[in-house]
Image (cartoon, rainbow, N blue to C red; front, side, top):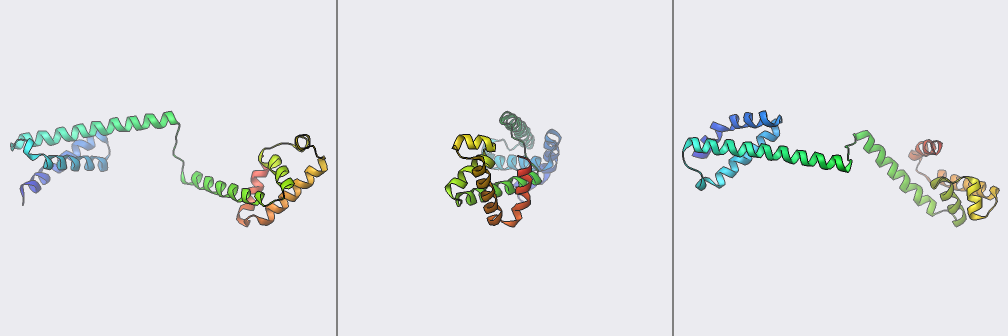
Amino acid sequence: MQKEEVLFKTHYNGLCHFAWKILGDLTIAEDLVQDAFIAYFKHTDQVSDNEIAIKNYLYSSVRFACYNHIRHEKVRQKYWNVVGFTEEDNTALELNMIHSELIQEIYKIIEQMPASCQQVFRLGYLEGLSNLEITKELQISINTVKTQKQRGMKMLLKRLNPEFIPLVIFLLKNI
């Protein structure tokens, strides 16, 4: 066995336990211990050949690596708290993806509608204006607004991917 291998086998488990006691995470502890050994092997010329000096160097390296890791995690956590980011579970992410795909599909269909129908549909369903508000804004009759909204909805439901129809119905009920 080479000198480096003996050193690694002699101190690895103890250093991992030491790091784990500080961090509480064995995987990170093992990574930091391995990093300490790599750093030592790169700088063997700067550390005494004395067994106690080597052991002290390794334990100090691991200790400071653990503290740096903890500091980094605190900074990272503080950043995410300020930004307001929270990780979403897979269900929420999938729902967001489906919602985005639905909106993209709806906008494609709206762009294919005749201009007057498109305008009324956008104002009524996307901007949430009432029929009366649309009549005032576009200066058209209430019956024209109702007719254009119906035409737009028929076109939407006819061209929309069938998978999205229940979601559209759900979204329209909640508007």
